[in-house]
Amino acid sequence: MLMRRLFLYLSQAKWARFLVTHFFLARRMARRFVAGETLDEAIAVSKALNTAGLSVTLDYLGESVTHADETVAVRKMYLELLENIHKNGLNASISLKLTHMGLDIGEELCVSNLRHILNSAKSYRIPVTIDMEGSAYTDVTLRLYRTLRDEYEFGRLIGTVIQSMLYRSMDDMRQLAQEGARIRLVKGAYLEPESIAHPQKADVDNAYIAIMRDYFAHTPPAYLELGTHDEKMISQAIAIAGENGVDNSHYEIQMLYGIRRERQIELANAGIQTRVYVPFGEAWYPYFMRRLAERPANVWFLMRSVFRK
Ligand SMILES: Cc1cc2nc3c(=O)[nH]c(=O)nc-3n(C[C@H](O)[C@H](O)[C@H](O)COP(=O)(O)OP(=O)(O)OC[C@H]3O[C@@H](n4cnc5c(N)ncnc54)[C@H](O)[C@@H]3O)c2cc1C
Image (cartoon, rainbow, N blue to C red):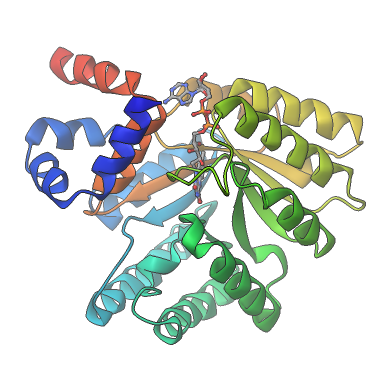
């Protein structure tokens, strides 16, 4: 718990970001979780994953952008990404963060950037998922998700994310299930106060299962994406779907690039739709720190693998 808090603190600290990103060993370690710094590297990784029977969702790394000019470059990269997914015939969707689209600068700017991306995504019929950030953004994310989903009549091609750690999530999910929404359910990667989020991991896990159970019981079941590496969550998902007569086409398991690689392939081979979240780009630092926060043992694991090379 202490290590988790430490890494989450470091993920936001400018001094630590400078030190780590200029330290070549850290860059090498990050490569385990990040497909590369360029679009070409991300496309090559995605092709290999597709060949192994896994679909992907590509994320251009970055968040909390504070200058409008930067968002133009982000938008441009996403447009290039969509074009490349289409050109290469990849089985891929995209994931993005509202603060990367300029939400902290202004909602109008953020929505304008999103519309450019959604126009292109819609023309190629490439699904878009709006990632969920810290709790300060929950309401605005759900509101913008609903507005754009309805505006684009993009059906389940636009989705968003719910975090089981938040007390509010069962209610949010019920509402979304009724709307037939495509939702990624995760535990939540941000440091949140006890007043709004379960402080104990066991409660976050129990909430995850309860929310998933409720969603699958909804008739007809909407499309659920289980973003987790936790075997308990995965086996429960498959069991609960089975109990409710929900077939494999209504859900998928999602894992992050570089985590439990063998299990990803095994699930796909067993006929469970499995998608890998593939991040790329130069701004890998906060993403990398959140991965270390989830599993501090990764620090030693990564160091060993770097020194063994
Ligand atoms: C596809 C995807 C998208 C996500 N999107 C978001 C988002 O939009 N917003 C957000 O807040 N969070 C997001 N997350 C992160 C999520 O909230 C969790 O922080 C993260 O997935 C860790 O929780 P967990 O369920 O995977 O497992 P944990 O509860 O961290 O761990 C449970 C068990 O899983 C296994 N495990 C976990 N990590 C590893 C590892 N590195 N290697 C081997 N085994 C491991 C171990 O057995 C471990 O005991 C996303 C996660 C995924 C997979």
